[in-house]
Figure (cartoon, rainbow, N blue to C red):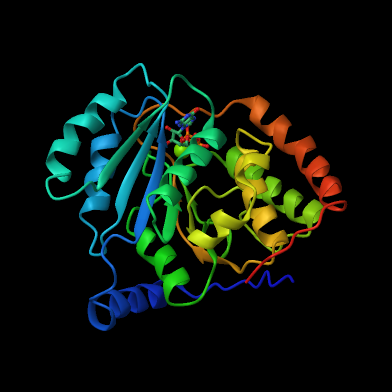
Length: 278
Ligand SMILES: Nc1nc2c(ncn2[C@@H]2O[C@H](COP(=O)(O)OP(=O)(O)OP(=O)(O)O)[C@@H](O)[C@H]2O)c(=O)[nH]1
Ligand SMILES: [Mg+2]
């Protein structure tokens, strides 16, 4: 079964709905049913600010930082903040790994951790404020109120919503997304987006240990396999802003992995069966 339906309402309408459901209609929503996973490598300028911004949201999201032994001491900052935020139960979790092992494996480790702890909604975002923490509410709402299995914070759902990227990078990212759509047939405009909310059953169903990509293409593969299983993917328009603080970890090798990998992934999928137990 394949739904792949796209939904993109204007951002302002969404904000009204977000407030309506969170503040008026659903004040007794379970408080800690959702966790946000943030992978970090050398994010000491951003980490405290992003944690604070998420903890201040009107809906309670717990947080899991997956740090790859950042030489700049990101994990130490998180440990310091755990004393502030974990006074009545653990809201701020930290998973420390040995060394830099890539974004994909950081997320897989985070997914297993979140499933073990019993969270119903598992969200992911970057530490560098490219993703606005307030949009977490819209992603969550798209799943809990509007029935998405996976909601995607999308730069390209309504035109091109990217701030402060050089034109070359915008074009590269936009055409990379179009290329993926063309090869795979997946009806998603922002196929490389890293701002996502998954329902628990999605991460329980897809074989996480078979995800092949470790870099940028990890995000493509996650969406592709989720779509193949017939889950409902929806795009929520967001505005993406270039990082203000800290260093980017993008490397040219990441694009090579994605370019050829997408063809390989699509061909491989022709010989696989995706069975969904609803
Ligand atoms: N744990 C872990 N986190 C990583 C690794 N590589 C990148 N990250 C984190 O993943 C997130 C995205 O990385 P960025 O460097 O912002 O990559 P990007 O967003 O594609 O690139 P820019 O737009 O240039 O910032 C950030 O929170 C990084 O700190 C890694 O190997 N391990
Ligand atoms: Mg970034």
